[in-house]
Image 1 (spheres, rainbow, N blue to C red):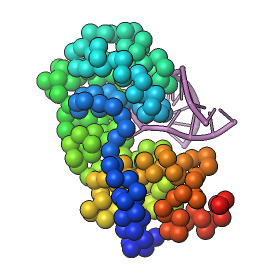
Image 2: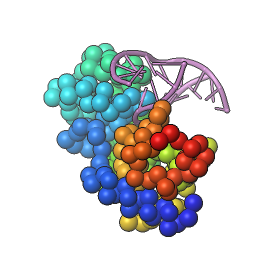
Image 3: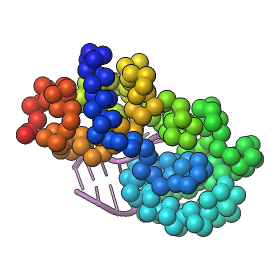
Length: 213
DNA sequence: ATCCCGAGGG
DNA sequence: CCCTCTGGAT
Protein backbone atom coordinates (compact mmCIF):
# COMPACT_ATOMS: atom_id res chain seq x y z
CA UNK A 1 0.00 0.00 0.00
CA UNK A 2 1.30 3.47 -0.93
CA UNK A 3 2.47 5.83 1.78
CA UNK A 4 0.03 8.48 0.58
CA UNK A 5 -2.85 6.01 0.94
CA UNK A 6 -1.80 5.12 4.48
CA UNK A 7 -1.65 8.80 5.40
CA UNK A 8 -5.10 9.39 3.95
CA UNK A 9 -6.49 6.43 5.90
CA UNK A 10 -5.32 7.93 9.19
CA UNK A 11 -6.37 11.43 8.23
CA UNK A 12 -9.91 10.15 7.63
CA UNK A 13 -9.98 8.02 10.77
CA UNK A 14 -8.83 11.00 12.83
CA UNK A 15 -11.74 13.03 11.44
CA UNK A 16 -14.27 10.25 11.99
CA UNK A 17 -13.02 9.49 15.51
CA UNK A 18 -12.44 12.80 17.33
CA UNK A 19 -11.57 11.27 20.70
CA UNK A 20 -9.40 8.20 20.11
CA UNK A 21 -8.97 6.76 23.57
CA UNK A 22 -9.81 3.66 25.57
CA UNK A 23 -13.37 2.63 26.40
CA UNK A 24 -12.20 0.75 29.48
CA UNK A 25 -13.44 2.77 32.44
CA UNK A 26 -10.66 3.67 34.86
CA UNK A 27 -9.58 6.49 37.14
CA UNK A 28 -5.92 5.59 37.61
CA UNK A 29 -3.09 3.79 35.84
CA UNK A 30 -3.52 0.88 38.23
CA UNK A 31 -7.21 0.55 37.38
CA UNK A 32 -6.35 0.68 33.69
CA UNK A 33 -3.80 -2.10 34.13
CA UNK A 34 -6.32 -4.34 35.87
CA UNK A 35 -9.02 -3.56 33.29
CA UNK A 36 -6.70 -4.40 30.40
CA UNK A 37 -5.63 -7.69 32.00
CA UNK A 38 -9.31 -8.57 32.43
CA UNK A 39 -10.12 -7.63 28.83
CA UNK A 40 -8.35 -10.58 27.21
CA UNK A 41 -10.86 -12.39 24.98
CA UNK A 42 -13.65 -10.33 26.54
CA UNK A 43 -15.58 -7.23 25.52
CA UNK A 44 -14.82 -3.83 27.05
CA UNK A 45 -18.48 -3.57 27.95
CA UNK A 46 -18.31 -6.75 30.00
CA UNK A 47 -15.12 -5.63 31.73
CA UNK A 48 -16.68 -2.26 32.62
CA UNK A 49 -19.64 -3.98 34.26
CA UNK A 50 -17.32 -6.03 36.47
CA UNK A 51 -14.92 -3.20 37.37
CA UNK A 52 -17.84 -0.92 38.26
CA UNK A 53 -18.40 -3.26 41.22
CA UNK A 54 -14.78 -4.10 41.90
CA UNK A 55 -13.03 -0.71 41.88
CA UNK A 56 -15.21 0.99 44.53
CA UNK A 57 -14.29 -1.89 46.85
CA UNK A 58 -10.64 -2.28 45.82
CA UNK A 59 -8.66 0.02 43.56
CA UNK A 60 -5.13 -0.40 44.91
CA UNK A 61 -2.77 -3.39 44.74
CA UNK A 62 -2.98 -3.85 48.51
CA UNK A 63 -6.77 -3.77 48.52
CA UNK A 64 -7.10 -6.32 45.71
CA UNK A 65 -4.48 -8.49 47.36
CA UNK A 66 -6.63 -8.43 50.49
CA UNK A 67 -9.60 -9.85 48.55
CA UNK A 68 -7.68 -13.02 47.77
CA UNK A 69 -8.14 -15.10 44.64
CA UNK A 70 -11.59 -16.37 45.58
CA UNK A 71 -12.78 -12.97 46.72
CA UNK A 72 -11.66 -11.42 43.45
CA UNK A 73 -13.30 -14.21 41.45
CA UNK A 74 -16.69 -13.17 42.80
CA UNK A 75 -16.32 -9.80 41.06
CA UNK A 76 -15.06 -11.08 37.73
CA UNK A 77 -17.05 -14.31 37.30
CA UNK A 78 -18.99 -12.87 34.40
CA UNK A 79 -15.81 -12.38 32.37
CA UNK A 80 -14.29 -15.18 30.35
CA UNK A 81 -11.12 -16.90 31.61
CA UNK A 82 -11.92 -15.52 35.05
CA UNK A 83 -10.05 -18.11 37.09
CA UNK A 84 -6.67 -17.59 35.46
CA UNK A 85 -7.27 -13.84 35.41
CA UNK A 86 -7.99 -13.78 39.15
CA UNK A 87 -4.81 -15.70 39.84
CA UNK A 88 -2.75 -13.44 37.55
CA UNK A 89 -4.21 -10.20 38.96
CA UNK A 90 -3.46 -11.25 42.54
CA UNK A 91 0.09 -12.22 41.66
CA UNK A 92 0.56 -9.00 39.70
CA UNK A 93 -0.63 -6.98 42.70
CA UNK A 94 1.82 -8.84 44.91
CA UNK A 95 4.70 -7.93 42.59
CA UNK A 96 3.56 -4.30 42.37
CA UNK A 97 3.62 -4.05 46.17
CA UNK A 98 6.85 -5.97 46.71
CA UNK A 99 8.91 -4.65 43.79
CA UNK A 100 7.41 -1.37 42.58
CA UNK A 101 6.18 0.43 45.69
CA UNK A 102 2.57 -0.21 44.70
CA UNK A 103 2.99 1.74 41.43
CA UNK A 104 2.57 0.56 37.85
CA UNK A 105 6.01 0.42 36.17
CA UNK A 106 6.55 2.35 32.95
CA UNK A 107 8.92 0.07 31.07
CA UNK A 108 8.05 -2.78 28.75
CA UNK A 109 10.35 -5.19 30.58
CA UNK A 110 8.82 -4.55 33.99
CA UNK A 111 5.27 -4.64 32.60
CA UNK A 112 5.75 -7.90 30.72
CA UNK A 113 7.22 -9.46 33.86
CA UNK A 114 3.78 -9.15 35.48
CA UNK A 115 1.61 -12.29 35.25
CA UNK A 116 -1.21 -11.79 32.76
CA UNK A 117 0.65 -8.98 31.01
CA UNK A 118 2.02 -9.83 27.58
CA UNK A 119 3.14 -7.66 24.73
CA UNK A 120 -0.32 -6.43 23.83
CA UNK A 121 -1.28 -5.37 27.37
CA UNK A 122 2.12 -3.75 27.93
CA UNK A 123 1.66 -1.76 24.73
CA UNK A 124 -1.75 -0.52 25.87
CA UNK A 125 -0.34 0.73 29.18
CA UNK A 126 2.70 2.33 27.56
CA UNK A 127 0.44 4.08 25.05
CA UNK A 128 -2.53 5.11 27.13
CA UNK A 129 -1.01 5.70 30.57
CA UNK A 130 2.50 6.80 29.62
CA UNK A 131 1.92 8.48 26.26
CA UNK A 132 4.29 6.33 24.24
CA UNK A 133 3.69 5.73 20.51
CA UNK A 134 3.16 1.99 20.84
CA UNK A 135 0.56 0.02 18.90
CA UNK A 136 -1.11 -2.81 20.77
CA UNK A 137 -2.30 -5.35 18.24
CA UNK A 138 -5.50 -6.88 19.53
CA UNK A 139 -8.05 -8.91 17.58
CA UNK A 140 -9.43 -5.78 15.87
CA UNK A 141 -6.12 -4.35 14.74
CA UNK A 142 -4.91 -7.75 13.60
CA UNK A 143 -8.05 -8.13 11.51
CA UNK A 144 -7.87 -4.62 10.03
CA UNK A 145 -4.18 -4.83 9.24
CA UNK A 146 -4.87 -7.85 7.09
CA UNK A 147 -8.33 -7.03 5.80
CA UNK A 148 -7.76 -3.54 4.45
CA UNK A 149 -4.17 -4.26 3.40
CA UNK A 150 -2.67 -1.71 5.76
CA UNK A 151 -0.22 -4.05 7.51
CA UNK A 152 -0.66 -7.68 6.53
CA UNK A 153 0.99 -10.26 8.80
CA UNK A 154 0.66 -13.80 10.08
CA UNK A 155 1.17 -12.86 13.73
CA UNK A 156 0.21 -9.86 15.87
CA UNK A 157 3.89 -8.99 16.29
CA UNK A 158 4.39 -8.92 12.54
CA UNK A 159 1.38 -6.61 12.10
CA UNK A 160 2.66 -4.37 14.92
CA UNK A 161 6.11 -4.01 13.40
CA UNK A 162 4.70 -3.21 9.97
CA UNK A 163 2.36 -0.61 11.46
CA UNK A 164 5.19 1.10 13.34
CA UNK A 165 7.06 1.42 10.04
CA UNK A 166 4.11 2.50 7.94
CA UNK A 167 2.05 4.83 10.15
CA UNK A 168 2.94 8.53 9.74
CA UNK A 169 4.67 9.92 12.86
CA UNK A 170 1.93 12.35 13.78
CA UNK A 171 -0.56 9.46 13.99
CA UNK A 172 1.65 6.93 15.79
CA UNK A 173 0.24 7.61 19.23
CA UNK A 174 -3.42 7.65 18.23
CA UNK A 175 -3.18 4.88 15.62
CA UNK A 176 -3.88 2.23 18.23
CA UNK A 177 -7.26 3.62 19.26
CA UNK A 178 -8.20 4.89 15.82
CA UNK A 179 -7.85 1.37 14.45
CA UNK A 180 -9.46 -0.38 17.41
CA UNK A 181 -12.52 1.87 17.43
CA UNK A 182 -12.90 1.65 13.66
CA UNK A 183 -12.65 -2.14 13.94
CA UNK A 184 -15.15 -2.33 16.77
CA UNK A 185 -17.88 -0.19 15.27
CA UNK A 186 -17.42 -0.20 11.48
CA UNK A 187 -14.95 -2.78 10.22
CA UNK A 188 -16.44 -5.44 12.46
CA UNK A 189 -15.46 -9.09 12.21
CA UNK A 190 -18.61 -10.78 10.98
CA UNK A 191 -20.24 -8.28 8.68
CA UNK A 192 -18.20 -5.13 8.10
CA UNK A 193 -20.32 -2.02 7.57
CA UNK A 194 -18.66 -1.06 4.30
CA UNK A 195 -21.47 1.25 3.18
CA UNK A 196 -20.83 3.55 6.14
CA UNK A 197 -17.03 3.22 6.13
CA UNK A 198 -14.94 6.32 5.43
CA UNK A 199 -12.15 4.18 4.00
CA UNK A 200 -14.06 2.31 1.28
CA UNK A 201 -12.21 3.47 -1.77
CA UNK A 202 -8.84 3.12 -0.01
CA UNK A 203 -9.49 -0.41 1.20
CA UNK A 204 -8.15 -3.56 -0.41
CA UNK A 205 -10.99 -5.60 1.05
CA UNK A 206 -13.36 -4.21 -1.59
CA UNK A 207 -11.13 -5.28 -4.45
CA UNK A 208 -10.62 -8.73 -2.97
CA UNK A 209 -14.16 -9.61 -2.01
CA UNK A 210 -16.52 -7.13 -3.67
CA UNK A 211 -18.27 -6.51 -0.36
CA UNK A 212 -22.01 -6.03 -0.31
CA UNK A 213 -23.37 -2.53 -0.72
C1' DA B 1 -21.08 -21.28 15.93
C1' DT B 2 -18.28 -17.16 16.31
C1' DC B 3 -16.29 -13.30 18.45
C1' DC B 4 -14.50 -10.29 22.23
C1' DC B 5 -8.56 -4.62 23.45
C1' DG B 6 -4.54 -12.58 24.99
C1' DA B 7 -1.38 -14.96 27.85
C1' DG B 8 0.89 -18.97 29.54
C1' DG B 9 2.07 -23.60 29.34
C1' DG B 10 3.31 -27.91 26.97
C1' DC C 1 3.95 -24.75 16.92
C1' DC C 2 -0.37 -26.12 19.46
C1' DC C 3 -3.67 -26.22 23.39
C1' DT C 4 -6.32 -24.38 27.29
C1' DC C 5 -8.64 -21.06 29.89
C1' DT C 6 -13.98 -19.29 29.94
C1' DG C 7 -18.61 -16.18 30.18
C1' DG C 8 -21.65 -13.36 27.59
C1' DA C 9 -23.34 -11.29 23.32
C1' DT C 10 -24.75 -11.92 18.60
